[in-house]
Image 1 (cartoon, rainbow, N blue to C red):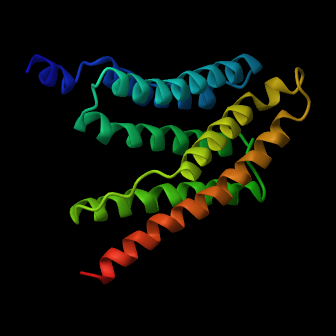
Image 2 (cartoon, helix red, strand yellow; image 1 turned 90 degrees about the vertical axis):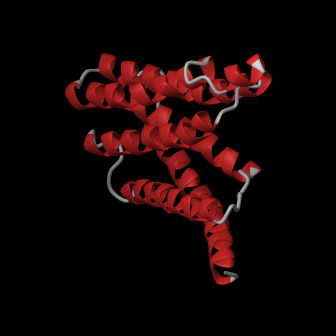
Length: 195
């Protein structure tokens, strides 16, 4: 009984890590908005990478400690979408993402909004759409792309071509979001038409 009660605690470590990821979002935005130096870029990179690590760690700990909770399942995708969405917006603001690459950012943001709406709709129908392996790859490529773009100008002195590689990976992530987003859309339409 105690074990079950502990599982739903909002102060469990997996949930605290998720709160931390949400709290990191405005801090990351402020660093990119007010900072113009290479040091601010490295700081933004460090905050983003730490937030990405908590995304993996909170899920891993929740599974091995059997502390999976409804609160965690609700907040985890919200934290991810906030992190990705705000980072994309700030990279456009900083002109690291520009020109045609803005369309890759638009595709990724549009997909995130689409999937959130479809998940809400499908949840009302008690339909679960499981995360595919391709969707996991999409998330990984997206995180790596954004990390490289955050380091971007500051990292060019260490590894030339960092920004270009980041932009290329961003486009790959955008293409993967179209494929995985279509899977959600197809499931949503199929269930809507059958009702």
